[in-house]
Image 1 (tube, rainbow, N blue to C red):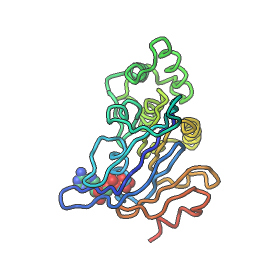
Image 2 (cartoon, helix red, strand yellow):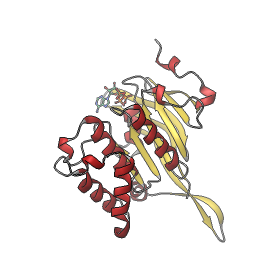
Image 3 (cartoon, rainbow, N blue to C red):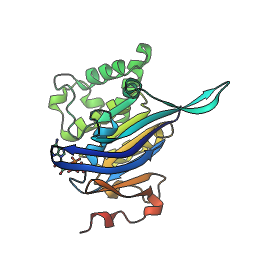
Image 4 (cartoon, protein in one colour):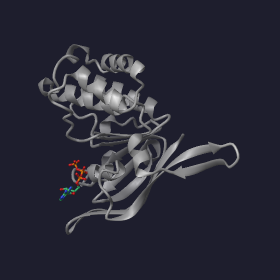
Length: 239
Ligand SMILES: Nc1ncnc2c1ncn2[C@@H]1O[C@H](COP(=O)(O)OP(=O)(O)OP(=O)(O)O)[C@@H](O)[C@H]1O
């Protein structure tokens, strides 16, 4: 069930302020980085993609590839409810439930996100170990360091194999080894999912990777394409 998000001439205003305009792009299976300077509009675009906020103009269409024995293969338009069921989101300021422990929070997330009960414990343990959170698993979220909390946020966004995974600055606060681990996990997830990651840490994007890049500049898409084709990303941050 390959998913696709088509953004059609989307604009987003807050009062008199134009935050995004003429956004036209199709997000397909795979990992797409949304990059741009501070204030360019990355977070706003991600929030629109989560369906959490609605565009001021234009539309976002979410479709899924369906194989039908009689009608053949076609793209079916998903309802908002269907989209939300298969979407996960890591906001820029992730807090979770501060009074829950890491294990409680992730167990709760796994259950709510539809992992079959019998598989919840194993999946939570696997993710905690992979993220190197075993020592912190009985600690409350309110007692974690920024980087530890960020890892919990990342794990909750990936735990149920979402079809659409939207992450706002997910590598913030992580060390190099942790970044590499989560980047690899996101790459694996992206074989079967649309994974969209905003970042200003462009040095963490593999210049030889297969990922796509969308450059946001002053609320518009400046350039987009495969990382290898776009080449030096640093130039988008020069004056
Ligand atoms: N609710 C809002 N009301 C007014 N202005 C807003 C609102 N949300 C965002 N903005 C403004 O819109 C612009 C884009 O913000 P956004 O957070 O999308 O950018 P960003 O690229 O994610 O930036 P950063 O990397 O600093 O988080 C900024 O100038 C911001 O101040």
